Length: 306
Image (tube, rainbow, N blue to C red; front, side, top):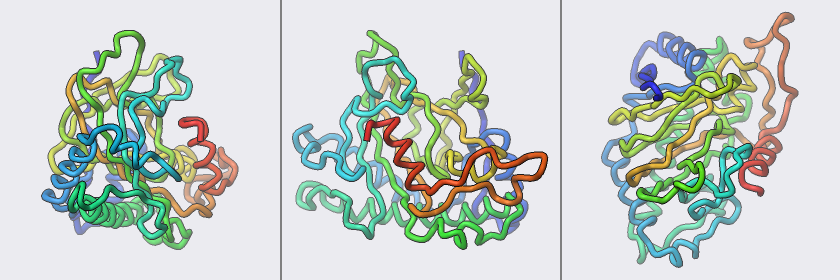
């Protein structure tokens, strides 16, 4: 049986930035995951986002399909994608989603205001708030790597970032007895960091040693009012594997489950290469430099066939 993991807690409101940066460093080395508390996103807004998410996923399938995914934005049906592309399961993951990307590029799809009043404004407000939390967190991550606080900003990672957000719905009571189907199969995230809000229903598990077989899975409980933050593959590349993009999954939920995942991804032209503080003669860069857009396209092709 999996054990329950108590993740480190990082307080974003702390005035001691260097102490906070050191806490983040340790969490990213040991787990690749941590809880983020006092992040400044109003609890009432989070509650409204979950209500609006439920409103959308409660629509008839034909209405949801009017917003079928284009340009990685919009509605993704149940079983449409499989995050673990090595899995032998013929079916995709047992979740449906709705994806929102950068607000300025006019590629997002939105339900009509008369169908879902205040839906777009609520989601846009949340997107902007969490984007700014992500930027603040990245400045602390830069400090944790013994870099200037504005390192990622100067690199251009935060200039028109390809941040996207997924409203995720895991329907309960699905019959998955015929084969091993997960709510979200085992994967690591593509980008810099992910900030996850959940409705408290369990299901998230992480595997701290992704290279060891068989994988050892540990349950990650939700914490009221906290984001669950994890490191993505791009951050692992930047840090030469000092920080770990931890493999995680969501079990098939016995009951209905909602979550909102915010993926803080860099600018499409941002070059991902080992930062100076993470390589040396004895520890040379493990990965060649790559543009984020090229890296992302390859990962999307593997996971979703795009």
